[in-house]
Amino acid sequence: MDIAVLIGLLGAIGLMLVARSLAPRRELLVYGVGLGITAVAYVVFALQRGAPARHLGLELVGAALFGGAAILGTRRWPMLLAVGWTAHVAWDLLLHQASDPAFAPVWYPWFCVGFDIFIGAYIAGLLRTRRADY
Image (cartoon, rainbow, N blue to C red; front, side, top):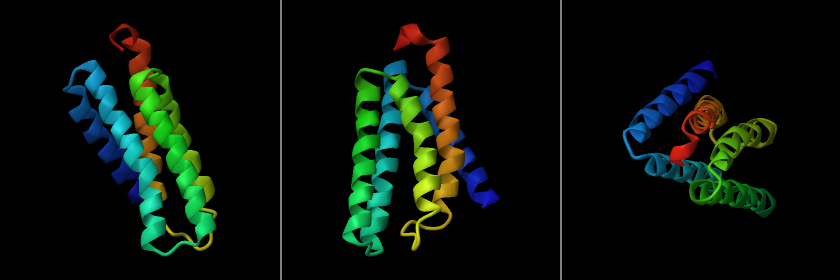
């Protein structure tokens, strides 16, 4: 799945370039909205592919956790955005690579690895260098 990781990385770079063109608080909003979308994506996959209620419930818990990190990170604690994006990699690999059957497309967790790690690291670095702007 090397190509999915590379495409995820390229997508993350594209998002970062677009977000950087905005004011600092708006840039964080872009990352928060993105994390929220990422959180809901697995719920959508589970619904589309007829996942059992137990699996759907687990995805809803993930959506609540990562969605909460997105909201709180955007409004109050920006470092939660970096933590949320980075922690999402564990969600991708531990839950979706190990689950049988997989309700997400096979490529999606690997795409997220490239995307999420880059965005999480970028936000953490951004906050270290421009803390006063947030």
